[in-house]
Image (cartoon, rainbow, N blue to C red; front, side, top):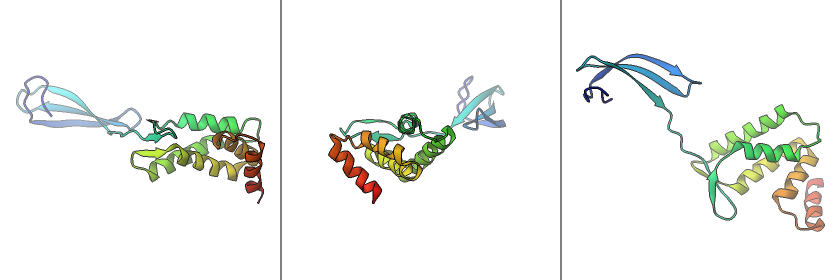
Length: 149
């Protein structure tokens, strides 16, 4: 580490502590040339997960978008916010485990539908009707038939 006072690169670490919520390390250092002390921080370098939308555009993965969609599908259903949070956590973990840097929005939508399918039939159909962009009642009925089989 380069000393901010004299520019020398030789130093020793005097103290290391975790700071914040464990997302960084604070280090007190002492320059071996001039003897002055200074503080440095180390952070995890995070590569943002990008979602490739249907039209080919990319945007950052946003768990809040998933949460809003699930909340909307579960509206007026006997599903607790705790359960919704658990589902969003599961989806986020799966997405990060499966991908390196990019994931298709359709893959995320399918994950949400899988979770809702096992949770609540009405929430599943609500989400599917928006996600699959049903154009008329016949498309909607086809999805219902799949569900009932």
